[in-house]
Image (cartoon, rainbow, N blue to C red; front, side):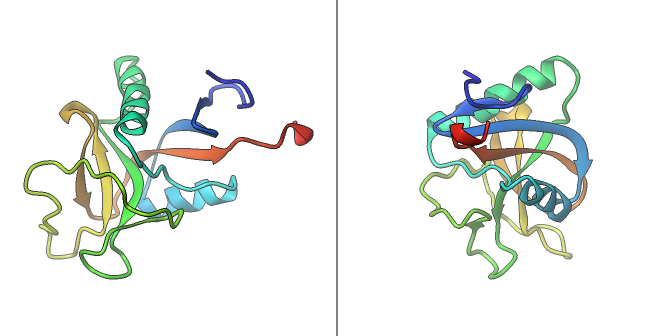
Length: 143
């Protein structure tokens, strides 16, 4: 469903989502989303997880995506206290086995969704990955 969303965007539960294939650090990806009045994707249910992963799989199958994509979950403020960039409560989790682990000495404060592992989440350092950003549906008066 794309009603109310711009071309190349997909709608889910009142938000428009778009997968960006360009690679950014986590900070730059979030900044890019904010410049469009949104945030990196926050995931609050299995249905939303499947919607986002489905878009990644389609994009991946077409050869346009990368295996890992940023989501808005992070523990940049307080270690091991994961928060969404849109300030929504953490209601759903889909961590890869033994994650989060803060493995690298420099820290792993940002989270990626791994498309080839059923969309499982992994904490990671804020290096370069593609990302997905949801934006609230615009008020129809402004279309």
